[in-house]
Image (cartoon, rainbow, N blue to C red; front, side, top):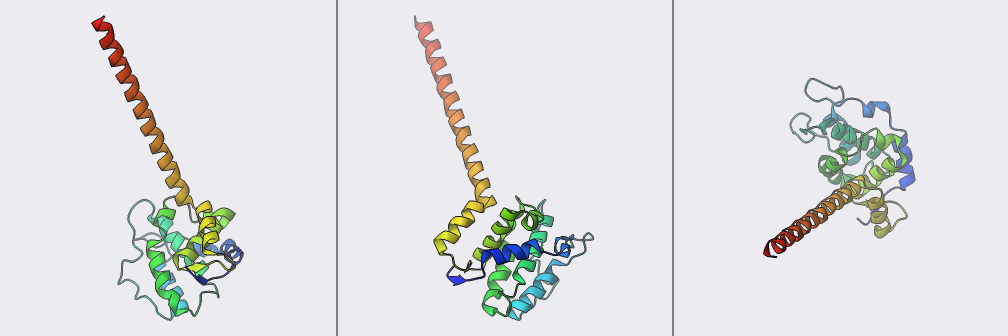
Length: 194
């Protein structure tokens, strides 16, 4: 990550102005109305001059309970990346396509697409995650500052820390119980001997 992208404030402002159509129901089977592949194809055409052949690749097909939110996040990111700062930059085509396929799964499990448009911290998180995912730095930031700010805002990082803390507490409690049980057994054995 060494190339400079736009300033974060520009991207968060753009996210705040995301049209409701990008939060509409994605087409999954017989449900929904927005064809995610077509939106991504339009984005890639304007960024890199290359369009997807829609319907021939399962690139944006997910199974599981977070599929709908993942697809909605892809749509919101497509809106964000359709900014003039990213257009006509063929070198960004592959990173954008790869990131849209693989970079949003963890976030989709934790944060609703609507929150990435309405909540200021989630907007900044998504903007920073997006820039990081395609290998760009926010304008005017060092790699260290950008990484620090992203980890501060990261819902994924926060959830990981909470899981690890909970697991640590459970281990400590398990060891405490084992020590209490051992002490009780030793006390009982001592009482029998006496």
